[in-house]
Length: 127
Image (cartoon, rainbow, N blue to C red; front, side, top):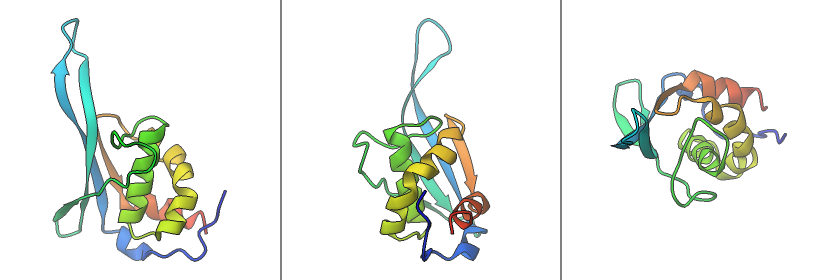
């Protein structure tokens, strides 16, 4: 696993930040309560409550970001979140697949909240 050296983000800033991801409900299937879900949206929430949409860094999945399972959507989500958190693009590229596998794949499918402290811990463990 590639190490982040140097880690080009302010780890202290992550403690007061979190990310929220939500998928859009599009339709209910006639045979029950199962939902069809579209690609998700993610916002960065600052300590003062302001929210900013996270830009999808398109590399693996041109159809959109996703979470709750491993795959190309989760890889793009990981890359997008790492860059949004201030990790340099080169460092983010080196570790985004591991972050996708370790964190993004385990997030709840419909809606998640990812505390900055979780990202900070994960990033710190890569130093």
